[in-house]
Image 1 (cartoon, helix red, strand yellow):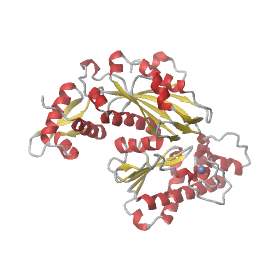
Image 2: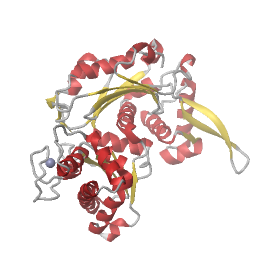
Image 3: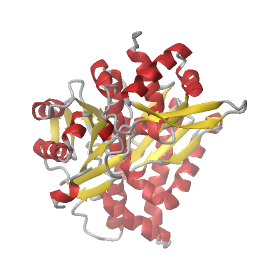
Image 4: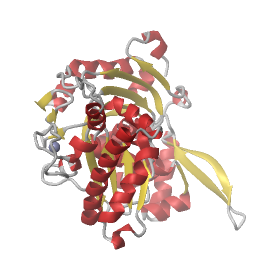
Length: 420
Ligand SMILES: [Zn+2]
């Protein structure tokens, strides 16, 4: 058999992962591969069961065209989202569908015991049949905070200071693990599975407990020297402000417009005690604003102005065609978004606004685990050994295995989690 280049398989499978399905002509056109390489690769992947022919479309000339998609059971992945207030685990198939999930609340700022992460992964793996377990290709971990080049994590919310996460997980789990900053996994999820599939210049804004930007410029993620680009939350928006940020400075965007700080300002103005900074309480401020509570409206106006100013800087610097808003603040879209856009427009160069779209994330609260899953898929396709595992022959018994997603929190009986 003629040798099949890894890059052909990579391009073809990557395209099908993004598009869900494609015809042979579309594959040839989009990958830029020559038709013979596409035919050869398709034959190999069909024989092995990695891809399936799902139907035929009637073409204009009367000739029928095959529609091709990934076999969802050709490869499985485990996704872990360490987002700061919860840890979430998911078992996903090759097309990014979540078969089931598991999540636990964590206490903000208290050092997270890595054994809880290991236990979550092992719980996912422990519920698979041996044949399913044999096709688990990789684990993707999305993590908030700062990740050094040697994969040490510093994250205030997780209570970690230069914690060697990847090394600690690697000691206990025998499946390849890939780690990426939450900002980046989110924009990658939007590019692979969400609303940024056709954009090469886009920005994902995670606005919740913290505020960060993940920037795609000219089709590439912008990382910077230490892969830390996009710390939007620590731009000093109001140097005269008395709002103290987690980083120690006064007047950072995050100190004014993150979800816990929106709630803090509201509570302070109402003379209520602020003992715990809980981002989830921001919902109350949104509800009050919907009822035209002037204090809530004033706090949101200040947050919107701060966010609008920061986004205007970002637009002037990076000239994106798409901005995607995600995180807790999206829950207040109806009382916040128009105000943000108004302030943003006032401060942005007019030419930069032409053709610029501002959208709310299409992936919702699952974006962290979807991002971690797509990290695992992307990383597996780039690794020749893992790529060959993805493309290894699939047993028929695996076809169609598994149920649509089920959800479990800690404390659910283990038996209920079984049989994915
Ligand atoms: Zn700061």
